[in-house]
View 1 (cartoon, rainbow, N blue to C red):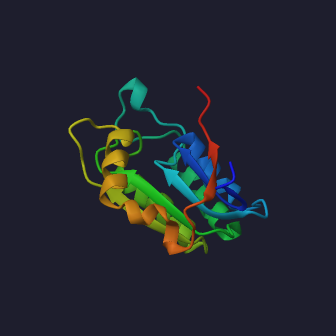
View 2 (cartoon, rainbow, N blue to C red; view 1 turned 90 degrees about the vertical axis):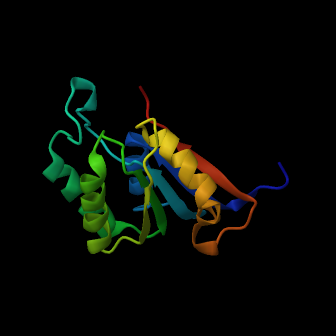
Length: 152
């Protein structure tokens, strides 16, 4: 793929993979220039009927603060207003912990959608704010992507 510049890449992750994308900014590879986390989270209790709840929320907030203190790469964080796997209030607390500790991130809360999943609201946000995915106007169109997926 001659149109890809391997010297400039971004890391992208969703859910637990989104937490991994945040972690990748702490000791980044030399070519990493930005990161995107979609609904970065871990330990959701949604599947057992507990909305807006995660296991050990205070430990997870501390983890985001620790990552923020060591992060060296600008990020875009995207969450959804009606994603009940962690809820918007907890998502904002993650961001406050990360940025308060020195992490560089733009935080975007996607508007609610009929289907209350992160993915549907993320699709809406990408269409609505497609310019934001050229992260802080610093990435050329040929920047390659490194994907960190949640393994289920």
